[in-house]
Figure 1: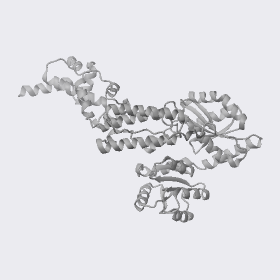
Figure 2: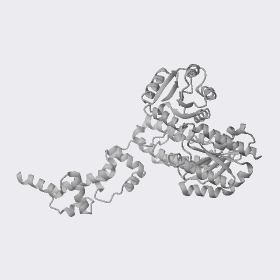
Figure 3: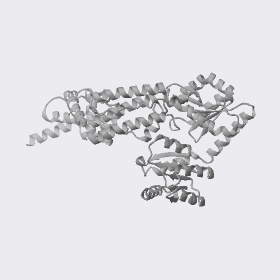
Figure 4: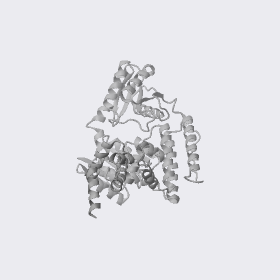
Length: 496
């Protein structure tokens, strides 16, 4: 049984969260509190496994509450449910120990129990505590040998992929084993899996760093060969005592964040490559209302986006700042489209709706640029109010007798193949191939009823040159053969 406590000052939200969580038979709510002060008193009697809290509370904040409880109850896990979309809040929540940061307007309450169960599973049975022991034991061994220590943080991401690889994409155990073997082989150090999904390492001082650089090509090449992903490593400055270990690990993570700007495997050293170049000019993407959503506007926005991302590639503002700017620009464009052009979010972004949750996970500058251009194109298309559905229907009616590959039709209407597939099924309630086959068989039925043309001629005329395939398809869809259909119709004609 998973014990969960809730801290939320809004009564209705608090009750809603409790009802949602208690739908799961494996979760029990131990308490629901309106303030941090109430929560501290309540959890003292029965500390929960997971504390779910808002950031903004009357009096002491949720962030302060997590910091205090984390010291008292090291095994307690935290989930933040907040209305703040600012990335700085999410980052601070994570630093305070939050395993998840969920926006209230994006929360699917039916999914909340699964999120809590997943978080509990990630902790494992003592896995986190064991990991801490291993790291400190290895750090102690390195420091006792007279060498200083550097922490390393590993990131894996495919070229031109939006997101870094997770345990769903790769076997972290196998990858960790491969990296550990290579680090130990060259006396670089060792590595461990943290939280079940992060690979962190202990590098034996300056000598280990020099060896890592020397053999990095081999390490990254072997990993790429195995999993098809690039390897990025953030390395902290050297420390000489265990007390600085946690700070060193965070410094390595921050250094690895620079992988956002690169598409090839690379090592990042702190602090040389994470300097105040991040401060720089706070450049923005300007949403233009002039000729909004027209072809002229679309060209202008594409140019604006290209220039903004070129600037980011040169100046390296923080990835969080870039994500905030992308979200601000998109929300401004979408809101304007909804207010003045009848834009429908659900219809315009089928399976792709831009959200804080989606953008916060993005890890590649180049792929984010391509994604943003795609979102702008979908926004323009949705805001113009054109009956695209009717255009597709008319095009297929006029061209059903031709070869109609789905990818070619998708390209004609300015859609990617994957998006067109989702869009078509959503609009027509059947997939593209089913619809085209239905259209061709309907045309064939008309010809069978109104002409004496041979089956081969009819089959070819409706775009199915293989008559044997035509026979099979006709019987599958109509439940009778072509001959039976034609005989049945002519019988009716003779009877009249």
